[in-house]
Length: 516
Image 1: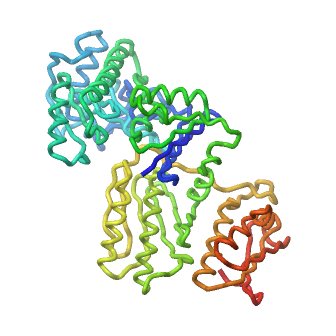
Image 2 (image 1 turned 180 degrees about the vertical axis):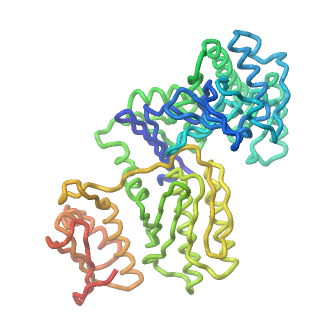
Image 3 (image 1 turned 90 degrees about the vertical axis):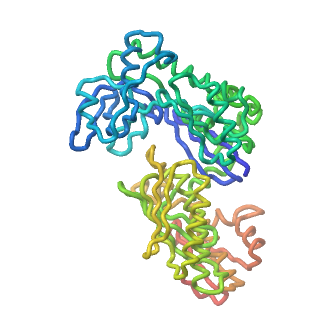
């Protein structure tokens, strides 16, 4: 699989598009005003304890208080607090934790009031960013993520990614990490570490230990709620997590961000610096690589698939709901059951992409087209699991229920990505909105393909608003001529001022309107 990263920086915001085989699969936004990010470490003050929830609200010096449940403090939180006190008092021995005597672990069914008191200073890390009216979710399990390893102070075990299957390789990595791991630290070995040598892993571990040392030094000067250590920018964090050998190119249109990317890649993968390109053309970078078009197609309430199938996607506070519609699907199956399976398989592929693209988290309910055969429902479930295997966010997929619904839970650490794909109406001067013209042209082509392939129409006339007519017919290689050559059909275009801007109709060879 070939991967490209397209990075656009403008007006204080960095947008990052991940393409797999030239198709947009992930979109990330990094606003310079974002104060709270996953991975940030804070010293906070306990503001309020909710005994009924066995949880507490923590003032971290930001707009909204953080929230931490007793179970999220971690079993080693007593050791964390002992370290914080020693660090604030300037004890230099805690920099390496050599000779540090761990405190008793927290009981699984304990009470938070026995651990935290109102007004107490605590060390916590952001596990989920603020979403809607909720503040950040915090954890007491402090960790530092690197390219190959994750450093876990006070949790002394070594864990290997479950995606590394070979027992020989798992044993090699475990022995290697055991030989370089500092005392009173644990390590999680990430999937990308498979096959890596001791030099690369040791260099990554030293960088993580440098972050720990920086945290210790900063704690000496902390007197109240504030951020102690920041996670990498979204750009650098994404490079750290997704940069692999199958990356082709990384294009950046801003010199400052380009230099930042080059500098970071030199530290994590020096051999990959050559794939970074500074984009200098006048055409906006997202338009040049087709990202803007993909965004407009993919982020609407209705998502159309080229075969004629379409999805309705609704977002609520509690969950996301997706409805699958067969639309003008070109039937090639031997019956209704086969057609339903085809529609569902095509939809599942797009839904898996949409979950990554919009970063939809929490509960997702999908209403697929009903299927009667158990083997077809099993085939759909297996296909969805295979498609979701490319998603690095933790998720759980349940088989289809008796009502034809599939339930998915997906890790939710950030607000879902939302992109406005509507345009101002030129006739009402912005008092209303209409669908993007790009989406309407795609709809016309989808209906044209359906009429040609499924209804066997050989001659068609399309009537549109004059603006759309001009867009479809202008130039020596107009869109109309492209459709004629592509679908081998006699196609006539007409303009009508009585039509709305994005209205269109099809007429057959007898001049009768075709009801779509």
